Image (cartoon, rainbow over all chains, first blue to last red; front, side):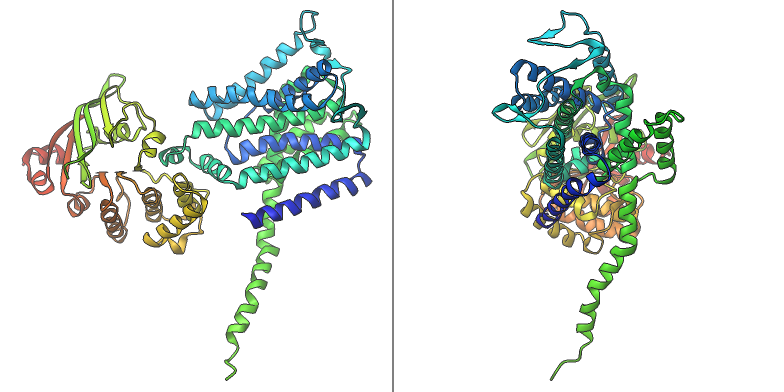
Length: 345
Length: 238
């Protein structure tokens, strides 16, 4: 496990280095920042769905809650350090309550997907209806469908006037993604993560082995929501406005599509799926000939039909069948030679 | 063999208007190996599900290893030291044999100890050759053995086996019998089974279920020769 963690750490550092020094040669840091944020959001669902078997249709709810929690806290506090923490805690607490209700109520599969979707739509409807002056938390007016603009964005801890923006903000997001990736790796490679995979494979058996699957699923669901909340806060800082669209149905569906296209059961797959499809969406957004939602839908259909495992698992399979096999053969070869050598005496 | 490890009082389970088990009073003693038999629909599987926590009984009481477990869930009962094997092999198909057994071992032990226990079970159950194969790719008999490995690695005090010999070859059954006898040295065992040959080879005492109630409870030879049992079990009069 330590070897594997070391390998993943080196991989993550190299990936972030490429992202910081090579990717800006082709894509602007501003666009890359949002790709990173969406990647983190996809990773949050990829972890709970791909490794824990929890299909949450409402990951956008935690993303939106994180964004709103940050903005409301930032307006009231006047700086960003504590609001970033609140942005992680609020969705996590909300998810732990929702998760406990669902998992202890023995709700699974399609019921879980429907409930999480309904919760997202309730939040969407509610936030849209908060335009009136009575919807105010401290100094922050919720603003209804217009959302909340003009709030303190990310600053250096302890110095509210030293804003982190532009390229620096891009570097900050890239490093944060690397840290979240490593934390996710650590969780998934620990006993907790391996047990979560066991639960994904066969809940009844894991229960018969003595594991309290309800508690474990609630914890995993909460961790996923905390990561989505962090992504939400980063999004709020990038967009400098939060609107109820964060809770929209299309946002929820998109996260699921990113995971399917990138590949479930991997950590890198959802990140690549989110980055690739979001980039495509931005490029398509510059023309009016084809509706980009149509293209996203078409890509999903093609992937489900042709590459149902997604990009990263398919590449893994190809690697194992080609280069991976050669490496294994190459490693075995010297041993055979030494065996064939006759004894010197 | 005087210590009672499992006891039920007037255990009743109703599904809507159907009563699957009715006022079942049952006792299992430490290190005993008991077979539950009966025709289809006799209530033995429902009884098994109730005592293993997969179903909550409508009425009655279950006492297990000194605790009242009537309303306990499966994971709470398993935590008490009860190993459960279901009728259809209930394993993690997407994981390897090693990973399956490791997950079972990890519940009670820390990681290094779980690794050691897993290695030990792989050797004891002769699963070493298939340790790194995915369970979903194994034959039925091998999957049954893997599931028995999941039960054995937890060092249970009570083992509940639902049709362990179902769909297995005679060679596999022979190996299964050996494993069950080995498990029986440290645990009391209940086996729900249909295969009479297997029952005769393994059991001492047998409990016969009929229409949700216990019809007779006696030594296997006496039960087999009992005309009432033959009548209800084979569906013909002797």
